[in-house]
Length: 182
Image (cartoon, rainbow, N blue to C red; front, side, top):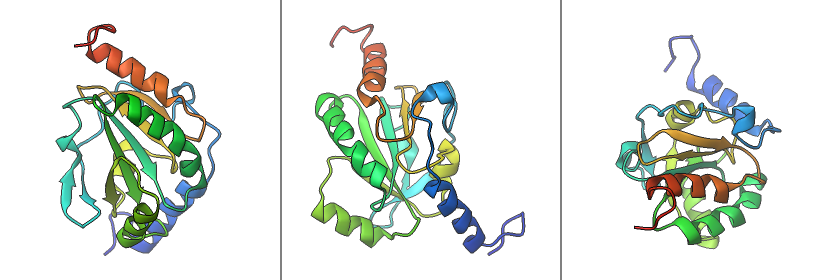
């Protein structure tokens, strides 16, 4: 199949692979990484790891969401993992943690095998066609976007040294009325 620019899936996949492999020096929204703060990402349908269609709207706009674009082979994603796990322990009851596995040099079965060996407490999804990558303008793996309960982006960043805790504190404090617990 050829798209409207005359490019087949192989060319698109190569472009995505190169974009995701290029290291980025940006680490937080100050450098405007990916989808701009204040925007709502377009609705997309991707898959779970069993190949079933899943709409991101199932989570977005319901409660705060953190989305990480990830790959089993991504060294920076592995370095970011302790921060994500710590944040999940603290905010997992108030924030949905979604990890979107990109379809670059891996398959759904590769991701499932990785998770069997290295379990993680997040919801894993599969972006075979790159629709979530495009919707979030994800520049690389380890890219993180935090959305508030209304579905608006409040933080984006890329790299291992992101302050996930601060981003989630901001979105959960706003949700519970300025810091008061419900």
